[in-house]
Amino acid sequence: MPTTNSTQPKPFSRLVIVQISQTTLLFLILAAALFIPAGRLAWLEAWIYLVVHYLLALMTAIWMLRTNPELAQERTQPGKNVKHWDQTIVAINLTLTLALYIVIGLDAGRFGWSAVPWSVRLLGLLGFIPAFGLPVGAARANAFLSSRVRIQEDRGHQVVDSGPYRYVRHPMYVGMMFFDISLPLLLGSWWGMVVGGAMIVIVFVRTALEDRTLQAELPGYVEYTRKVKYRLIPGIW
Image 1 (tube, helix red, strand yellow):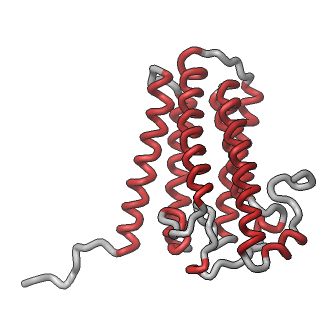
Image 2 (image 1 turned 180 degrees about the vertical axis):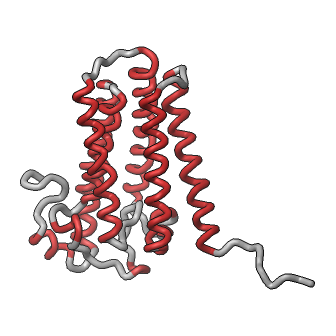
Image 3 (image 1 turned 180 degrees about the horizontal axis):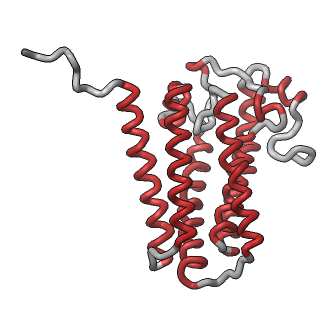
């Protein structure tokens, strides 16, 4: 007798499997970029960081799939009208991200060029609170938080002014800047801070271009900028 129970996974289950596969592949690449230059696997701080970061990233991705699958889809497969300059910026940022891990691996993992005090490394650890918290807060508030710069007319794109968007216009990027600083500090690499600084410059460039795009193309955004005056740093810019 044929059974009525289907062995096919539910759509949500398939999405979770895809997300686990993608997240795992990403972290295998990052682990290779860290440990191969280090020339060793016996590096406890790096292992703790990678495992915790992997679990947090995976839990966040699954939470997004469960609470807002349309946003999860947009972040993994954005629409077609992505700004050409943003594709270039994303490619540069990905290259710098790999460079960050490689430099940290060479410095803190192999040659020990830097001597970062544990008190400073603790600051790096604390920096991961906003580095992870701000992107999650932004995703909770903003259903249009795409991974690429585009006006999402196909999704009814609207201005969002709740959550962290009450204080700065681009809280996700603030979290990215905290990450770019916190990772090299946590793992003990002053040279990694140089790469992290370059990544922060890219964040400022992307923020300026994205903000200009939103003011020109997203209805209501100019009015929002009058209410929330600062892009990234309250009181400064």
